Length: 100
Length: 100
Length: 100
Length: 100
Image 1 (tube, chains in turn green, blue, brown, yellow):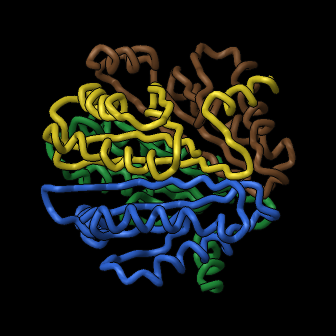
Image 2 (image 1 turned 180 degrees about the vertical axis):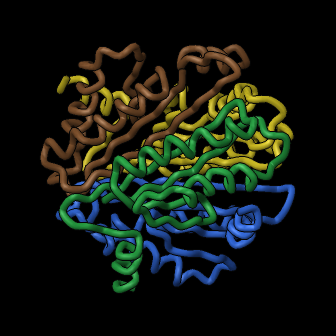
């Protein structure tokens, strides 16, 4: 299981608002039947699940802005892959909070 | 007002857990008397506030792992700076949610 | 054709040097028979090629540090995917240089 | 001395080409009298120098697209700060190449 943060930015859109595009990508996540957890943050989307599954999801999400008219898309994918223990998004946050 | 995401990663630490280091950086935020909003996510920390103030905070947070023994630190700072309207972290998330 | 920047960082390594790990990942690129272009920079590796091919490469490169003993790996993949023209790494740099 | 990679992306531009904006930011670097090294890559700009100096440069570069009409700018700054030795951009690349 790995944790991924993904941020998808279309370039050359008409206005400065990207929420329509972000919502389109997020719907792709919501319609997924995969065994994943996810959350929307102010700077991207965080997804937790099997590495192959979340990478395939990233690939599909990257395509959505093109389907919605974008001609250029910048996508940033950060993967935190820990194999000595099964770290979830919640456990990572909890682990820091305990030390505050 | 701008929104920043910051992720601070010490290299060459003894183990694979980074939560002690992350907690140290987060305390720097909590002890700040600046007019900022912030939240801890599974992949970093998101901060909202005046651009100069949050950049100065990022500079101080980057220093904390060195104070705690790290010899090499990789810090990633993403800034979303929108000047046609005053977008907060909450408004960004809300704006996407409305379209789902 | 798309351009990708990839940076692969193992966590909890013995020392602060990562060049052995980076060299391992880069060899994966060099041994590829895919139709790609790539270059090593001071902050990562830039790869140009068909999107599916370079994403598959990223997946393989991400695995290399685990093969070499790492227990946790942070990988950052940035994709610049432009579909209104065929932009190569060289053309992107050239396009900026012309305007200097 | 630290190494920084900076990528500056204006949102809501008229077309998909960003080279005019990137050139503007790069000129800010070229006109600097600071003791820095830098290079333009296909995915950003890499700068090497004193940490305070390169962070101040990043702050100035981030402002340039606004001077050129942008209303929203996404800037990503990655800092590699190594204090057990003086690593330059060239040395980092060389260190990997030796192991290939």
